[in-house]
Image (tube, rainbow, N blue to C red; front, side):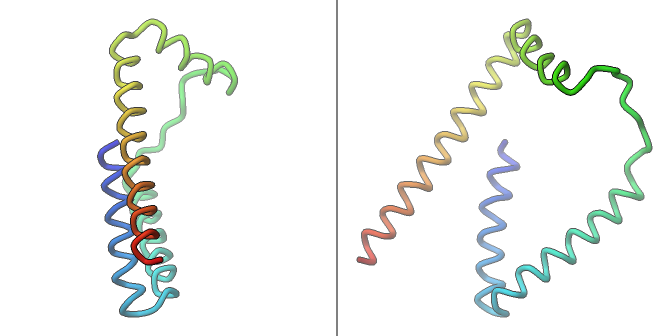
Amino acid sequence: MAGLLLGILLARTVSGFVADIFGWRAVFGMATVIMIVQSAVLWRVLPQSRGETRLSYPALIGSVFFCSVRSRLLRRRIVYGALGFAAFSVFWTAVAFSTCATTI
């Protein structure tokens, strides 16, 4: 979760600098190049493996519920993640409102 939130913040910061210097189209060009390079690297590095389960998709989604019922640690981590994301959302919503209020 920390990596996700950090990635969001860094992506916004870097894209803002790139757009300010080279224009907004450069952000999409840079993202395209990065995704193509990342796809090629992952295609070469990741092992070829097939899943060993024969569960259908609904059964697989249902198994997540049963795992959370059985595992106290998993339930705790779910709550931590939800609270962290809620705090992140509340913070950035408040920042957006305070920015709008100062510009009006």
